[in-house]
Image (tube, rainbow, N blue to C red; front, side):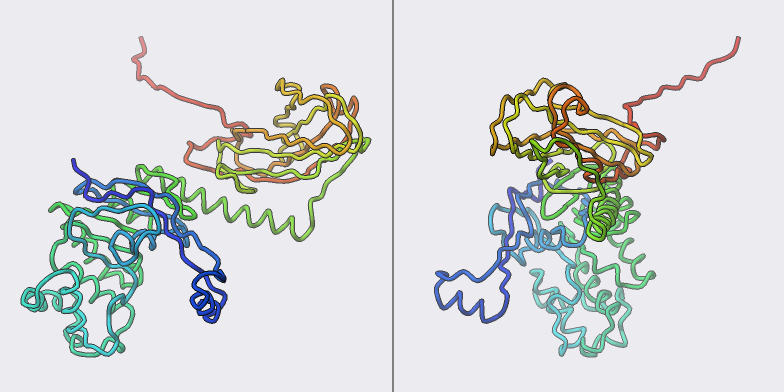
Length: 412
């Protein structure tokens, strides 16, 4: 089935100026004095939408959802990449977008229909249906400035869907309407779907996404990080939100009290930095079960050291050893180092751990074990948390791969 929407490597950058004067100064100098900071709203987003498909677009605030919809509907242009649309689009984006506050509801509805490409005669013929669906008969000839937000939503949706579009784009605007009208909107959207309309639906309501959409796109920090079934992506999204909340809590503790830790060793080498990085290479403190992370250490040598060993150990909240290893066990002996040299070690770890808090201790030493000739031992150098992802529920500190089969049998 041919795609009705194609997005290829779509990137959108905005310019952020500290003041209006800074914008003017950059313009007057013809760009020779750059006063803005670039803001990346979307980064290398690619996907296809087939005809009759219903797509939910989910993500946290600031993930790039609204920017993507604006590009798809033509109200914004990508900085890089391209978008191809193969049908007429009807969109309900930002509340009141395109409405004039001094014009009546009737005039604004007429203008909305004409902006969708309908003739004036066709638009006027649809006005009675728009008025009936919106149930705003007493206000249709009143200026828009007297409308409540819910009334604006009623008029905007009624006008945008007066004719069944080939592509319907709905942003979060519906969430401010009353429950009764939301039900009417959902019924109309379902009716359009049955007749072949392609739907792009942005919502933070998991039930609505599951009900209306058979596929979902997850955006995070301007990137398309997942494309799949709504159930799977919503589980991932919930874990992402929980991870952010827990990470903020952990970092707050670090900021308030510092890293409570113990250092020991000869001092011939010093572990200067330790950091946990997520799959995007960014420092993090909360991860999903089974997530792949990197533990990155920087060791500075104050004296000559032959064949140093760098290692780490993960402990649970009760102090029990969960997992530990080092470069010697992994057959990654880096060689000899002179005073003033440094060594960067990057461990790739899959956190097949149960949910909970864990600590990491790191060490640089000679030999297989740090107690033999310790150069620097940094106990509890950082704390991280593992939060549930989309896996089946389990207990314990180890997330083991598991499968199950059941078979009904008759007793002899």
